[in-house]
Image 1 (cartoon, rainbow over the protein chains, first blue to last red):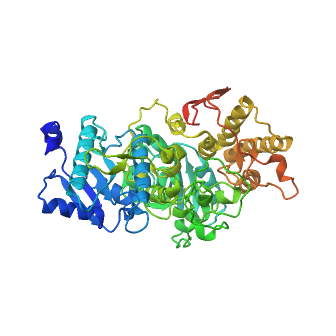
Image 2 (cartoon, rainbow over the protein chains, first blue to last red):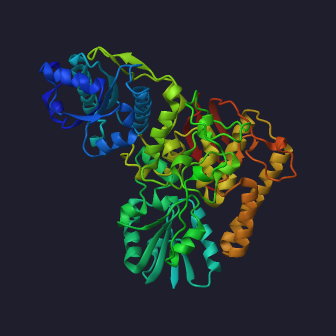
Image 3 (cartoon, each protein chain N blue to C red):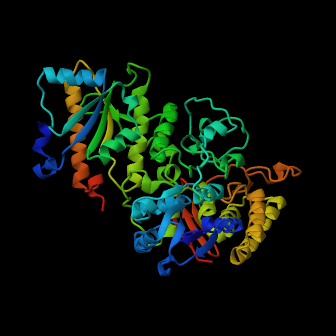
Length: 150
Length: 411
């Protein structure tokens, strides 16, 4: 696991739950491929299977964050390849607004994000996991996560 | 039966509205403006108005102990209200049920007096519909091409949200104030569901589907991801807290903000808001000074930017100021009939007690059927960066139109 090389153990210890909403098509497909290839990723990651990332909105993200998640990410199909219509793009709009909202309140915008992955390539999913872990580490170092509320 | 009305902090709009309870014969009404020093007496119904701070906890518990029933009246007491926008800067405005455990809520800014009357005598409240069901505008449900910040009065048939103006009607109940009748989108003071702001954010984010969102190549995942840089989506909505959480920030489930405060709660409410929102917010929170404060802000900006206003506009504004002086006298004498008469006259010009009809450059809707509306119709204006000062009000706005600093002198 590459992130262990430069994220200090005390920061990694603070990551208890990272909720990833993965879509049933590309997202979950790539996670399956990664599982078949026995790729390792951070044990804090909790995957929630959804039909499409278009189902995930601010309410679900806030539910996760207020019930103890440190970070939330959505992993959907590649741009233009949503198996329904444009759920991944709509989800991106909403997550972008959430990021702006957190910034306006004085928190980091790094602990929510949206990614895409390819079902045939497990490393795309694992790479996305590494990226969200790295981003969360930045937010923890800056002391600007929701758990740092004063 | 005795009813006691307690006014805590903030504007006294709801407190003044309870003057109308005096006309009822079934109970005796007593007004208490200094609840901290109230000597405890047994009370059947206590009505709490105004916004609440942790310092008020002792007084509130005293009220709860001595009352059969505690009613939170108006948005400030039920959900935090517009003053709770100061929580973005670390203040601790909280709704009544977070302080004393439970309460009966009557939402609205201003809260509806008919609902309060029903609640006092233990009658069921009317089952109010969603605002969109009673709204006269038609929805198209198309994705937006851009979000508009100021109302263009050309189209009065299509849904505000479909035209690109953020309207909170989706998550609100029908109400008496009806900002939508005066070409002002609903501001969401009467939420129909919990965490209405967050839900509206999801709804409006979806509507923005046609607006370009920035993506970038992810090094690790070798696919695309959402980019951190500003894009059309964020530039279209410069103030999300102020637009979506105007009345419900403490009950929205969001943590307390960490933006540095400048110490003054009222100024913290205004800082960070958009210039076109200023008259809307000052109309909400000025109490018995709301009209003069709103007109002061509007006139300061108009004078500095040479926005011309017609004689008719000036006349109506002058009438409003005169009515405000009369209102102050009536509030002092607490005469329900006079109060009703004067507020009705204010409503005729300003639309409602939140002054929805008053705007930069004129009015948003026709006041009198015999007038020529073109005379005093408001129009879309340019946002000009700078510092504006006029007597008791001084504010600085940045190029996007966000208020960076504001100073309001009392009185």
